Image (tube, rainbow, N blue to C red; front, side):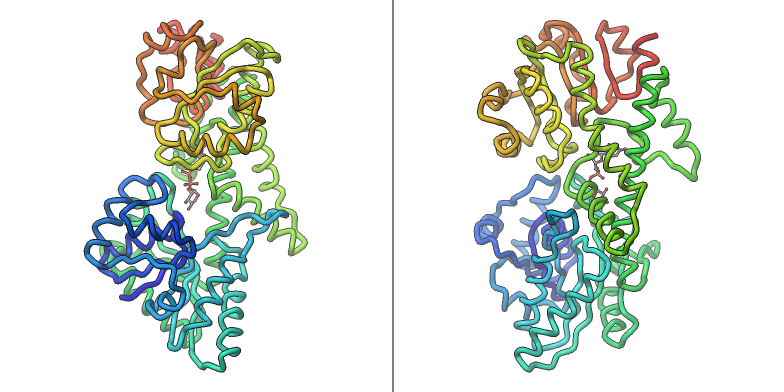
Length: 455
Ligand code: UDX
């Protein structure tokens, strides 16, 4: 099937590459000439396991092309996926300017039936705006062409995007019950048929419900995390091990184990933005989403939990203190630093006068870029970008772990102890057992695990 993907960010590039892998003829449009040149030269602009190989294989097979040509893109695919960014507006609502510009680009050039598929996370009612934008362009050109607008939100996770796309838990598709909507349903059904062979994974619904489902899913997951973080903070006070509680609670099949890990807060491009956007949508309808407001507030506070624990242990004034920080990306297997907890930790430590040495397996370049935005020149001068986990440790008063990269999970504790001034570890992702740390002679500060450390 001929497919056009508009936008080669995370979602667009993964969707395009994976649909090509299934044998489709995919045309990816991006207005960023540099990015298109990079992709055409065999590079990829993001760090995502497995993606480079899929892109290379399909480019070589001639099933995947990248271009800045809006007209060619509009003519190519009967399915036109819109996968451009929807960054938060100043008021937290999703900024639709790129989505609507993509829609206008299609409307300016299409001459025959098209299905426009919204893959970007967009608020309820966006499909109608996309429809109006396309129709307005057709009217301007006095052209008659029918089209359908469908919603097919993407649920992939950064760091596991190819895997998530190729083995989806579910495919959510919203189509209208009009003749055009029925045509869209038939085309999307055959596009996704390879995923439904063993089990039907597609959930068909109306367009608005599909748009809403994506926000509801992310808001639910963010809620679980903030809820556990709030319990973990209480666990620290009352002498309870949140990890034992997590296992005890998660064993109830109605609750399940996933997304119950307490830590130093969630980050990334989706949860913070989508929680805010859903709150904003509700406010637009005169409703206050009280739970989500709390989810956001708890998460903001949680990002300071590591800095506070360090200050509690070493004093509010950290001048003359030096800390090693492991992990900068908002989660493992990505170089994405958007809303990363490490940014808040570093600001906290530097504002208190400390010096730091930081290390991340892939996010070092991105970290240098964002820290220039976050920090003053004087603060930045107190950050050393280390070349390895152990390089970061030399002469540090303590190690602070922010991201749970695999490489940090079984470190050489004897070497850590030898390098640190004193064996103190603050662990924002609860990677280690407090009892093991006690046996090793490490002073261990996890999140919500005080029962064992202080026993
Ligand atoms: C998320 C959704 O999972 C995905 O379905 C959606 O399409 C986009 O948003 P992503 O942002 O890539 O994906 O990352 P995810 O793995 O969900 O983690 C988000 C954040 O939550 C990370 O900062 C992670 O550290 C944190 N997290 C996750 C926790 O703190 N505890 C948990 O139990 C799980």
